[in-house]
Each structure stands twice: as C-alpha cells, then as structure tokens.
Length: 117
Image (cartoon, rainbow, N blue to C red):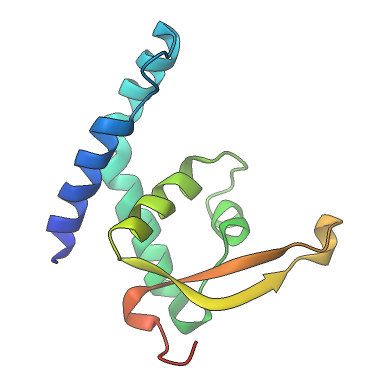
C-alpha cells in the first residue's frame, strides 16, 4: 500500500469514527473543525517516526516532541498503526520520572521494524 493510499484509508476511518453517534453539537463541530488538518498531522507524525529511525518513540516522546499532553497525536499515531505505516517495535521503556512503573510501547516506522524486535 502506498503512502497516499494509506492516508486515504485513514481518512475513511476518520470519517466514520470522527465523533460518537450520540455526541453533542459542540463535539461534532470541534471534530469537524480539525478534520481538514488531519492529513497534515499524519504526515508530521510519520515524518517524526522516520526521523527516529530504529530508536523509535513512545506516545510520551511523541507528545514531548509536539509539545502537547492531549491525545490528538496519539490518536493519529494509532491510525497510522492501523494501516501499517507505524508498528510496535516489540520493545518497551519506562519513565521513572513520571512517578509510576508502567512500560510504554516503542513504535517505529514500518521500514525500521527489526525482524527480531
């Protein structure tokens, strides 16, 4: 699947899942207002993933890079994962400075997925 085909597939997923069927009007308006920017966000995230190479990134790294704590970038990363452009590297990391012992998935652009990782 080409990058453009993958983006088109993502857009179809988003059109269907943009908001809940019982969403309030304000939620629908908010979702629709960002819809034109979604492709740009996917490209930014994929570019970031490629730049990280084999080292990969977690959702925490992604939020740090884009200077946000919101789920917007995580959700777009998830959509890229659904169409196979970003994959789970098989590695996990912890961030002790966050005050918990949770492991976080390290993602990579699919071309950086190691066979044994």
